[in-house]
Length: 171
Image (cartoon, rainbow, N blue to C red; front, side, top):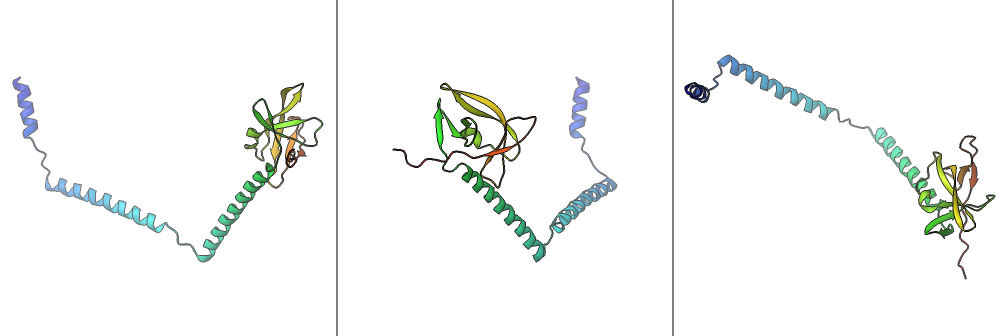
């Protein structure tokens, strides 16, 4: 116990006292770190480029073209499904494709996710009161209101189909 008390009292009494050399070294080190951080801040402020009027006009033109393109694609998507006949079978809603050899339907919920990249989508058809499905390859073209379908995923041949329009007010 005597030893432990002695070690404890030595630790609490002992203070770190720096020599003048050590103090100067610590101060120099802190000053160097401060100068480096100031230099980094100055470089980051200088790196903010000042744009010329031509560069600003070019950037604004690019942003405007991008905005117009996105608005056009959104409008084409809206037009593609606007005023289309919606059929309901077994609590699901479908669009009917025109000009196919059989009555094929696309589920309304899947139509929201169409892209210009081909994807495998189920096409539904009716047989004796029940809906069966067939997998097809489907894509859309951004500049067309048609839907492009290939019945075979291996031998890809896309054919354009439109959705059936609404028939005015029913009586």
